[in-house]
Amino acid sequence: MRAVQLTAWKHAPEVREVPQPDPGPGQVLLRVAGAGMCHSDLHLIHDFEAGMMPFEPPFTLGHENSGWVHAIGAGVTGIDVGQPVAVYGPNGCRSCRRCLQGKVNYCERQAELTSMAAGLGDDGGMAEYMLVANPGHLIPLGDLDPVAAAPLTDAGLTPYHAIKRSLDLLIPGSTAVVIGVGGLGYMGVQILKALAPATVIAVDMRESALAMASAAGADHVVVSDDSAAATIQDLTRGRGAELVLDFVGSDATLQLAVASSRQLGHITMVGIAGGSYPFSFFTVPYEASIASTYWGSLSELVEVLELAERGQIHADVERVAIDDAPAAYERLANGEISGRAVVVPT
Ligand code: NAD
Ligand code: ZN
Image (cartoon, rainbow, N blue to C red; front, side):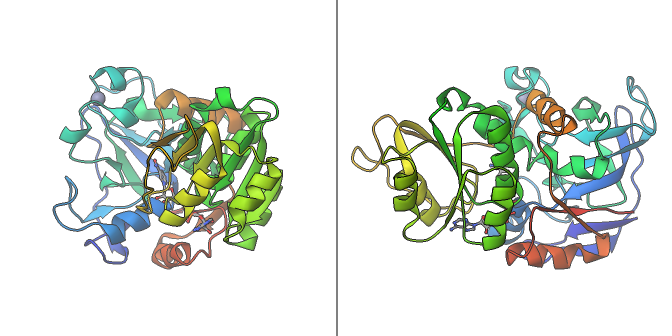
């Protein structure tokens, strides 16, 4: 079968012919419906080198996956061949307190894991078939289009988790700012509108991204430039925002995030551009907190899929053939993808 693989650190992904896997005991083989193309793949490809991760290339990319159950290994029950499913991504040890609570993204034994997820160490979904090592991470899809469901497992789940932890701040009269309206930010705007009565301000450098934010329900859109923080202060009548979600994570966006936030607010960094901000008594509003978040929990993915099934959120999908994936990664790096590119193998 064909697969989009990272063959070496700092090398562009390649389409290669690889063996179709067989599901061993306790495993499931999916025929892939869709594998979302995440900006994290670009960080993975370009920012890492040998020895920095507990795994090495080659492996198949794609950590945002959906498909149909194709074959079932010995001992797996409760799932049928042909069933459409979404794949919960993060790997965990399966036995620590966090894993047992479904908060696998924060597994207590993360340091011992040899792969972060399928597509992040293990072979992922950018192939015709994909092996799932833990069938407990498969969530049956009701009436959702399996291709459109793929991005919900990361571009949907990650903002959902980041927003849910701050929901009690988002009362009537509050403001939430979304910096970076790409794959994750576009879902973030919709999730905010679905869950909270807050005013939503979306910030991006691309006019096309701001247009998508407006279509997704953002109350205001702001161009990301030197005056963005002042504009946000004006829009909030000088109060600042209760929640600022930074889906970029550069020095510049973190600075904007802090300058846009309010005392007692949450500044949540989801983007992994590697930026930093000098935290001191004088640089951050009183009792504002800065946190990073990683992916989301299994139960939160169930909730995300429920929101999508009710039509309250949706991914804006551009379908990409396996052979076109390397070029699509280049377009993602150049800011030329709107919404989410999803590799659709067949
Ligand atoms: P994307 O490329 O689809 O979107 C990024 C958006 O940010 C684009 O619209 C771009 O125009 C905008 N942007 C870039 N610089 C900006 C600036 N200075 N000001 C305002 N907007 C700016 O990327 P994505 O797939 O949505 O991922 C976003 C980030 O989240 C990436 O860093 C990715 O690695 C990270 N991510 C983190 C997690 C996690 O668990 N923490 C999960 C998935 C992705
Ligand atoms: Zn664990």
